[in-house]
Each structure stands twice: as structure tokens, then as C-alpha cells.
Image 1 (cartoon, rainbow, N blue to C red):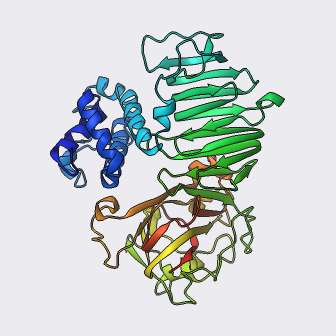
Image 2 (cartoon, one colour; image 1 turned 135 degrees about the vertical axis):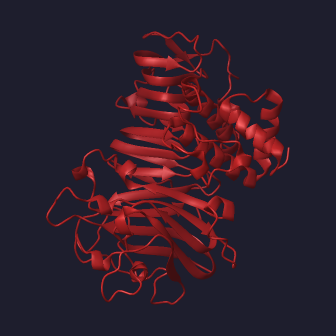
Image 3 (cartoon, rainbow, N blue to C red; image 1 turned 180 degrees about the vertical axis):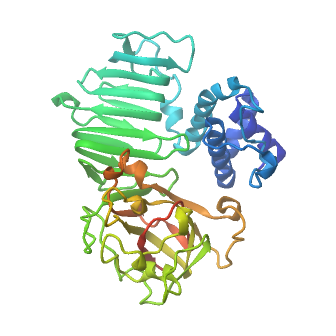
Length: 469
């Protein structure tokens, strides 16, 4: 199988719809192992298919969907064109697609842990202690509270939640859809899904939760780990501390209570840290530095330029290009300062493009926002940061009419601070926020251009880009 080709299109479509045969699956897996371009295209198509099939995207008129690629054989799903039973098939098929992604991205870890290579009568290391509305991916699965769990036993939960207690005393709640495999009486491999861990006993200290691209080690704590179908990892510490162990890092980052970290799939292990600020013009954060005039992109050095390539910024009398505020090394002077913020009209969003002048080794990218309406304390909507960051290394800018993945851009990180802070009520949203994107070791990548695809009308105050030629 080659990419691009009709065979590739057919295989991906068949996998997404659950009709792929073993030979096609083997050929597709072989291609994804060696072709990074095919992997990027595959990940994008599975993501689109998931959004469509979940009902998050809906199209009343197919003729209006200019961005749907007929060659991809992925079409909008609505009740008028697809029976309801097709929607119900979505979760198992998405899990199947996710497994293939993780086989490719996980560096062989699924080959070691993901399949039943352990003896059927292996050591018992845990037991089910509670089941809430559980449905299993294999419909014939029968599980009861008190049932033992063996090393290497795959737990494949489609929906609901299952409580598990390990022999070490560690307690875990698994939320469907999830797939995980116990590795010992104090460790587990989470292939996909979400699990909450509580390790309070002496024997459970040091509990290890492994994922396809990271490992979280308990330091007497409670934390939640999540692995999305396309390989994005998230860990959130609710008590104590957690070490984030990544390949190639001698000193793993340690997260403390209230801290959260995202880890993108891929060799770079791009990490995203998001933190609330102190709500003052000093822009103080627990770990992230305040806005800086010492970064490579700051306007004082003359290396970089910024412009809007999509959407329209709000301008005030006397303002020529408010986007230049993002490279001036300063944050806003107060919580409701539209004149010292760069934000898109009507919460519609748009895109910022930074040209660094030449391809450089980018090591860190920080973004800052601050907004709280002076008359309405709950109105912090424009503090939220929702964007996808892309990079491009060539000197010739790609066709900006194309979607980034079609134009050759590298997706660096995805940011949604509302999801990060788990905002349910307006007052839960921090008014001042910072996002710091780094790699597990070394550079994020070599890029000349950085593209922020922004969703919403965030009051951005500064973009700091660190690196060197």
C-alpha cells in the first residue's frame, strides 16, 4: 500500500466504519509505521470521522460543505441519511481506530502489553469492587463486583464506570470508553480512555500508570489520567505529587496538587502547561514566567513580524495593527483593557501568523490572556485560550487557503483552557491565564512560521517565542 492512493483512502474509510479485513488492516499498519505523512492524514481523518459520527458536527445540506473531501470517503452523518444504528456503532469503531493509532505511536508498547501474550491463568493483582452502568466492548463479557483481575487481562469498558482495587491498596475508577491492562499489583497500562487513581496506602506509593507515550508515577497522591483516541495524554493532580516520566528526560517534571499537563503524541513529546495567574499587572504564575521582552520574537530585536491571516481584529481609534501588541513584551495593565489586547470581533476567532525571519530551533512558546468585565465578575469569557498551534520550516509560505494539514504545516499543540480547568460555571474560569508549550527534551522543532488558529475572541496580551537560529 502507498500514500496517497485509492487503496489508502478505502482502507481508512473501512477502518472508521468497522468493515476492514485483516489483510487491509495489516497493510495499513505497515504503511503507518514507516510513512509520517500517511500517519498525519490518517489521524486527521479519524478525528473528523469521530466528530461527525458523534454528532458534534452536523450538516443540513451537503452541498454547502466545501471542506468535505470526497476522496477521503468520510461524509457528514445526520439522521436523514444514516440510520440511528450506524451512530451507535461509532464508539467501538473509534476505539478500534484508536488502537491502531496507539500501536503506531506507542513505540511498540502495545505489542508488549496490548495483546493477550500473558498466561490466561496469570497472577491475580486486583479485583472489581464496584460497577456502575457498565457496558463492555465485547457484548458477551460478564463481570461482577468481587471478580478477580489478572496480570495482562484487558479491561475493555465501553461506557459506565468500574471501580478496581489493587493488591497494593491502590484504588482506581475506570470511565468508559477505556482500554487498560494491569501490569502488576501496583501498575497499569492505559491504552485509551480515562482513569482516576487514589494511592493512600504505604504499599501503593510509587504506583505507575503507563500510557503509549508517557508514564505517571505516584508520590502518595490522587490523580486522573486520560488518553484520547489520537494519542493526546493528560494528567491532573488532585492530591500530592506525580512524576511525569518521558523517554530521554533525566529529571522528569513533577506536578503538584492542582497542576495539569498535556503531552502530545510523537517523538518530540510536546508538553502543554496551563496555569492561572495572580490577577495583577505583574502576571505572576506558579511555574510559567510572566510576559517577556527577551524572547526571540520580541519586536525590540526586529527578528519577527506578526499579521492576521484569517478573521478580523477589533480596532480602536488610533490603532493601526493591534496584533503587534502580541510581540511588545508586556501584558495588559488591568483586567478589562481592550485597547491593550489583541482579540477577534464577535468571538468569531481567526488566525495569527508569526514570521520569525528564518528557520530557528524553537524551544518554547508562551501565550497570555487576561479578562474580567469590570461590571460583571462572572464575565471572564475572553480569558479563555482555545487554539491550535502549527509550525512550518520552509522559506516559502504555504497556500493559506488550504487547511493547515493540507498545506504541510506541522501541528505542534492543541490548547483549550476551559477543558483544562474543567470549567462548568463562569466563576470557575481564571481571569488571567498562561499557556507554555515545550518539548520533553530539546527543541519543539525547527520552524520559520508559527500559526495560531484561534477559536473565540480571547483578550490575548502576549506571544513569547523562545529559540535560536
